[in-house]
Length: 152
Image 1 (cartoon, helix red, strand yellow):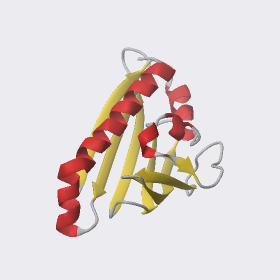
Image 2 (cartoon, one colour):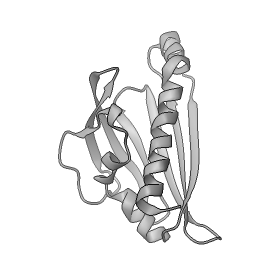
Image 3 (cartoon, rainbow, N blue to C red):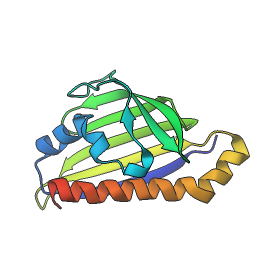
Image 4 (cartoon, rainbow, N blue to C red):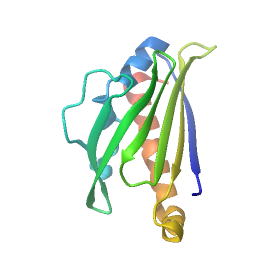
């Protein structure tokens, strides 16, 4: 299984506690996801994540609904949490969120996503044709929304 990686770092002019709390509220996930993804929770999420929290939602892939379930594996306020896919479009998905105080003030937010495509060579082709670009677009949107909501 070939693992792909996506890494992003962004600085926000908010305290580490305020930044972590924003990300730890799963209801904010919809605010950070572009409309074309069709993100929709299947069950009302909790107000705050915790280790073991399960999140069930639906996204759209080429207009087709896909169920996605993630579990919070690690939850260490205010510096880190990790989610893994239990069910969804990838063969494997782990997203590590880390938060560090920025020496210039504010908080550095780092995302490290490791994922694998399903369907062997067909999945590899899909990655190169559209998945890589789509994930970049999603994280670019997220970056821009965070600036709008929380400032640089």
